[in-house]
Figure (cartoon, rainbow, N blue to C red):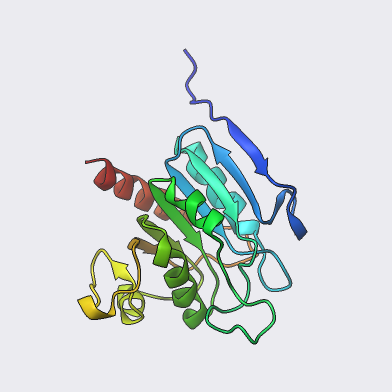
Amino acid sequence: MFDRETQVVDCRHGMGLGRGGGLAQRGTLSETGRPDVIAVAMSPGRRHITKPICELTYGMRREEIQVSVLVLNSGSGIPDTPMRSGSFGITPEEIAQISRHKLAVIHTGNIRDHVVKKVREILKEADTPAIVVCQANIDFEDLARVGIKTKIVKPKSSEIQTKGKVMDIVTGITRGESCSRDKLNELVKAVKTTMRSIDN
């Protein structure tokens, strides 16, 4: 008997657009055999680098968590700003890919306003529990303030704008830099705890 679980990952849906870190290019999906967790990364570019998402994914897979990876086609920029170049957007196909999974790990950046707006945009249509991973020091109140359902702080029912709900937040993961073992452990613990609550 082997002491590890084999994971088969279909790498990747589509050839990708633009430049990316290795195969992690915008508009691509690598799907694992079991749709448990999907890691959602912003598009690579001058300010958005996909590097941490590979380490986060590896750390979760090492702990026998089945993880797919979706790199958004239009993940850079800010939602709700159609006049600016590189504005954030998510397609119905990407929503469907996220919704097939039990849990979404959404990796964003370091500007609080951008983080909360991107998470809100993703969870507006994706009825999926989520863990937010970012560099910015945000909390559940920041998310609830813009209408995002969370496990701890609930927005007023008239102000709810999302179908999905944020179950946990892991901050202090810097975009474009190696992720510390402590932060990987924090993420793995959050994912396992959330998956147990989803399965029960």
